[in-house]
Length: 139
Length: 256
Image (cartoon, rainbow over all chains, first blue to last red; front, side):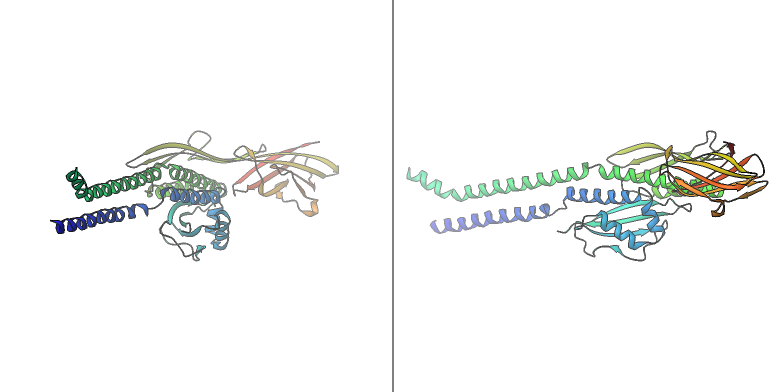
């Protein structure tokens, strides 16, 4: 009778450990889910930068002229230094337009977001572009 | 008494198990609560939709500017409708915020025709204008957005001239040019002035002491000397604004 009691204690302890362990395993993926607020702020920032550039037709003109250096400089100027970005421009037929990389890093964290922005030029021969802006903050 | 104590000792393992279960439940429910709060915040944030709508309005405005620049150059309004069709097709392919339905109606009320009004008069007044009404509908499972917006891009030119006879046919001509973009003073990108001698239009240059004073508020005063035999001094002014929209007008100068 006394020997059995010891075994039951071991089983109970084992059960307690397994319950705690399974709860920790269950909750771990939840705590590592994307931070929606952070992503929202990043999306807002990216959209604001593109809108600011497009406000007087500068964005369309830089793309139309293929002035990727100036576009990169403008992005570097408008975005905080700690932000990673990668910008890709497509034409109406979704053919890639930018012949050079417009980015400040090839590091894109798991929480990178993408903004899709439609741009029309102000020139008399109107062109339409779809701008994909990937943004990420360092971990 | 001893039996009671013995019984308590025997069930202490079960108490630990129940306590562990309770702690596990608290941990789990806290995590679920935090997760739900994050989810609802992420979904409730409507600013990306506002930014998207703003970007569509901005793009529509750029299309209208480009189209009136084209129409003022070519005199044809067909490009305007073609550009609008392309823009609408591009926007309606988007599904970031559900189904996009952008439509447009060009202004047909007089003096507009197919959304374009080009009036380059002989009375010192010229207008290049485009006008269009857009409607945008965004619909998905969670929200619907319906809005309409009106875009009118107008470049207005006003020219007033005066002259005084210096000696014989030699006259000093002053021409004041006023440029407006959508009713507000605007800077010109290029101003070309012509004056008429019989049936020939000439451009004044340095030999005519041609000078332009820019007042920085859309007002430009030009002056030049020219031998004009007639008592009527006619000038023609062609201005391209900073949006590359061309506008022209002719004016008869009054004698000072």
